[in-house]
Every structure is written in structure tokens, then in C-alpha cells.
Amino acid sequence: MKIAVFSSKSYDKKFLNQFNHDPDLELVFIEGKLDSHTAGLCRDYEAISVFVNDVLSGDVIEQLHEMQVGHIALRCAGFNNLDIDAAKQKGISVSRVPDYSPVAVAEHTVALMQTLNRKLHKAYNRVKEANFSLEGLLGFNLQQKTVGLIGTGRIGIATAKILHGYGCELLCYDKFHSAEVEALGARYVSLESLFSQAEIISLHCPLNEETRHLINADTIAQMREGVMIINTSRGGLIDTQAVVAGLKSKKIAHLGLDVYEMESELFFEDKSLEIIQDDLFQRLSTFPNVLITAHQGFFTQEAMANIAQTTLANLALFRQGQSNPNTFLVQI
Ligand code: NAD
Image (cartoon, rainbow, N blue to C red; front, side, top):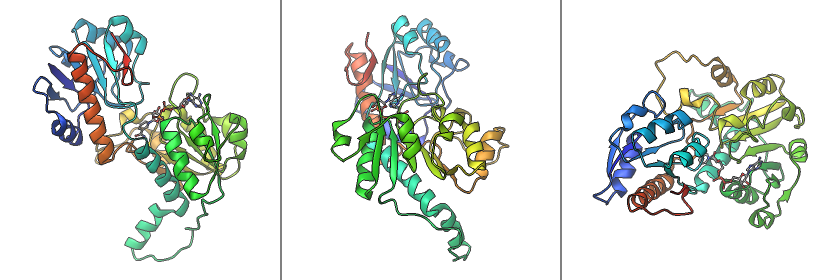
């Protein structure tokens, strides 16, 4: 079976080739993204594999159906970039990697918190230039700080466990209460209470119509002065214009982002010699108290190995006419 692997970088090739021991899975690596302009490349492939910024809108699904592509293997957990109803309607099965390493993203979340707090991004550059002054580098103890976690699924739970180790007080908001998180002493509260009490707010819920721009001018107004906001989930959870205003007014004292609303135009590519056209992103980058990483929360050896193994297992199941209820979003 021939599989077109979109958005494939050197590291995707390395891990997928390393774990592909199945002679029936022929992986063809395509560096570019899948969208309505590139969907034509899927002709002659029975299955495709995609990543977070590939576009699987209704019209792309329609094109895949016409080209008789039978399966979409997402190499990620989130599926906000996929029109799931269109896939069901066209009879294209879809698999994903639901929990390749929640700990990888949780550890990156706390790394962002602590880098911003202790200003390591500033300290690193200072020491390199023989500037050993501590002026402006004052941080705070994480111990006894109130952290609000929005979404206590796999990554939220892993983050709660690390922060519990730091001695933080944990407030959570989710429709479903996790006994694992409650066992740490965390309390579920309303979203309003979380916004008004938390000194640090970290987002771990999926992006959907309900959560789009969850962080906006109104919700920022409910937050404490000097709040830290961390987003390692999906860029669309934050109204970027509103956080820029919050940073300018100093209501938001720290912002850590691993994801960004318009990241599909920027992330995963070297743009260092280009003129960036996204003025909002450029404005964000100028704040000394904003730290942005380019969607690398998942990027550990353990997670990459798990992504490759699960994706290959999903593709093999599809080829055998089978599925796995834990990893298949659409079973045909
Ligand atoms: P999960 O499905 O295990 O947990 C998501 C949780 O969010 C669930 O408990 C769910 O009930 C809750 N939720 C749903 N709607 C909510 C709402 N309106 N308000 C509050 N909570 C809500 O998912 P996960 O594996 O923990 O991943 C969380 C998100 O992290 C994913 O959706 C994905 O977007 C993102 N992610 C990012 C990276 C990265 O590299 N930065 C990697 C993997 C996943």
C-alpha cells in the first residue's frame, strides 16, 4: 500500500523509517503541506498521513474521495484541522495518535512557565555577553502559587502532577472531573473563579467552536493583575489581539506560547531570511515577557517514537480492513 506522508521533515522520515518493518507499507515523503492546492498529489495513494497544520477541510476531503484515498492517518492527537463529518460522509476512515506522550507536552508547559518566571531567555543572552547583572531578572517561587488548568485530560493531568511536585495550589476547569487530579488536592471550580483566582493559567483543552478565543478581552478583564498565561494546546484558544492589549496594559505579566492562531503560515519552517508579513506575530515577539516556541511541545524522542509506531500500526490496521477504537476517529 502506497502512503503519501505530508509535512514530513527529516525527523519524521527518521522515526517512520526506523519503525517501519512492514514491506506492505510504502511511505512516500512529501515535504509540503496538504491543502486544497496540493490535494492533487494524493492521486494513486490508498492512504495519506498528515500533521497539525495540514488542511483537511470539506473540499480537500471531497478531492481525496474522488482520488479514492481510503484512509487519513493523523500523526497528532488534536483534529481541529479535519472536517470529521465530511470524512464520515465520504467513507474515509481516520486515525490519530491520541496519547503519544502527554508528559512531553506537560514538561514543555512547565519549562515555559519557569523560563518566563526566572527569565532564563534573558539570562542566557546576558551571560553570553559577559553581562552578569541580575537587574530585571527577579522571579518568584512556584511553591504555593495558584495555577489554573483549563482542561484536565491527558496533558492537563500530567501538568497537574508536575505542578503538584512544585507545591502549587491547583484549580481546574473541565466538564469531566478527573479523580487523578482531585487525588492531588486540586479543586474543580467555575471558569469565572479560575480566571479571578489563578496567578498562572495554563490551557489544555481542545480547540472547537466552544473554546475558540476562550482567552479574549472579557476573560482577560476577569483575571488577576500580573497573570501568567501559558498555551501549549492550540493557537485559536487565544484572541491574540486581546492578549497584545493585555500585555501593553501590563495586566498580563507573562505569556508563554507553543502554539499561535496563524502558525500554519510560519511554524515548522526556517523563515529567518524572509520578511515576516504577520504584524501581530511580530508585535508579540517584541515583548520581553513573551516566550514563543514553534509548536515543539510534542518534540521528544519518546513522543516521536510513539507517533511513528502508532501511525504505522493504524495504517497496517486500515490495510487489513480493521480498526482500533482507541486510535480511529472514523471507522468504516
Ligand atoms: P484530552 O482529550 O486528553 O483532554 C482534553 C480535555 O479538555 C478533556 O478532559 C476535555 O473534557 C476537556 N475539555 C473539552 N472542552 C473543554 C472546555 N470547553 N473547557 C475545558 N475543558 C474542556 O487531550 P490532551 O491529550 O490532554 O491534549 C490537549 C490539547 O493539547 C489537544 O487538544 C491538542 O490541541 C494539544 N496538544 C498540543 C501539543 C503540542 O505539541 N503543543 C501536542 C499534543 C496535543
